[in-house]
Length: 464
Image (tube, rainbow, N blue to C red; front, side, top):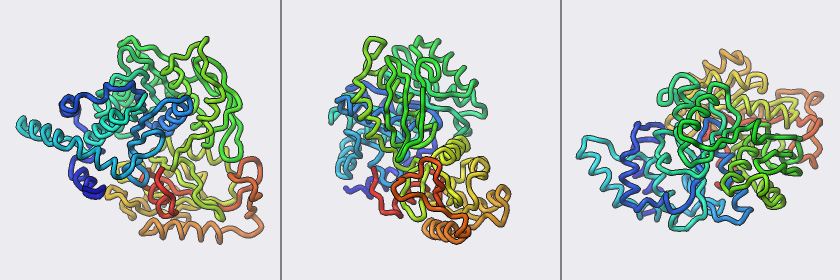
C-alpha cells in the first residue's frame, strides 16, 4: 500500500467533522492493540483556538530539555503525515502507511463487532488516533503531546489518562456538537480534566473559566490559571517574532525569543511553559534550565500561523477559521506590521461563521478577494461573495474561482490599487516589518486551515 491508497480507505469512513457521543469503539480498538496509549505519559491539549501552536511549543520545549516526543495534531495543512510527529518532525509517508497496516486487522475486527450490534464503523479520526498512539509506543517516546480533534469529552483522544491537561482559549465553534452557549462548549472541552491530572488553563472568558474550574474541583485536579499562577510579564515585537518575559510555575524566564507573532501567541507560549513545568514536576525550588527553555522557544515553528510565504509584496497566511481566531489575527497584524495597503484572500468552510470571520477583519483589510479552497466542504463562491459584500461593500469584494487566481488577483490589487506616494516599502534588513516603519503593500490569505495549507503548497513550501 502507499499513502494515497491509505488515504482513500480512511476518507471512505466517517469524516472528522462527525462524532458520536461514545468512546466504546475507540476503547475496543485500543484494547485489541494492547492499549499503546498507556506506554508513555500524555499531555492532552483542548480548546478552541491555539491548540496546535501550544502543542508545538510544548513539543519544542520538551525536546530542548532532552525528552523524546510524539505529537498528534489536527487538521494538517498540506500532508496528512504532519499529524503524527516524532522528535518534532512529521513521520515519513512509509511510516504512516506502516502505522495503518499494523492496526488494520484490528480495525476490521472492531468494525465487524460494531456492525453486529447495529453500530457504525470506526471514524477516520478514530483510526488516525490509534495510528498515532501505536506509533508513539513503537518509537518509543518519553512523552506524547496529544491535541483534541473536536470538543473533548467524546473526542477519540479522550481515552488517555493525562499527566497534564491543557485548555487553550475557548470560543464558539462546532455548535452542532458542542452546544449553543459558551458554558456548554466549555463543559464538553472540560472532559479532558481528570483525577490525578494537573490542569493548565489558558486565558478564558469568564463563563468558560467557571465551568473549567468546577470540573477541576469535581475531579480533584490541581489547577494553574493564566493570569494567576503563570502569565506574560512583558512582550515586545522583534524582527522575526517577539521578545518575552514569562512568569512560569517555578520561576520567571526572561530574554525569550519566540518566532511567532501576536499577543495570543505570547499567551500560548506562557501556557506551554506552564504545561512543561507541570509535566516535569517543576516547583518554586525546581525551575527549568533557562538556557534550554530559551533554545526551545527559539526553535518553535507553527506553519500557517501568520506565516510569511513571500516578499515583494508580502504574502502572509493564517489558519484563522472562526471569529475569535480572526480577531486575534487582526490584533497581531496591527501589532507587528504597518502596511499601507493589505488585501485579503479568504476561503471559508461552509459550516463556519464566515460573517463573523469577515467582520473581524473588515478594519484590517482594504479589499478582499473571496474564493474556494481544495476541500469539498468549502463555502460556495457565490455564498461567500454575498456575505463579504454585505460587510465590505460590493466595491471592495472581488470573487475568484480558484485559489491560485485569487492570490494573483490580490497581488495585482495590492500592487496597483494604491499610489506610489502612499506605498512605502520597509527596509530590506527589517525582515518582518517590526517597528514603526511602514511595510508597504501586502496580501493576507486566511479563513481556514485548508486555505492556509493550499497557499503554502502553491508557494512550494514543504510540510512541517
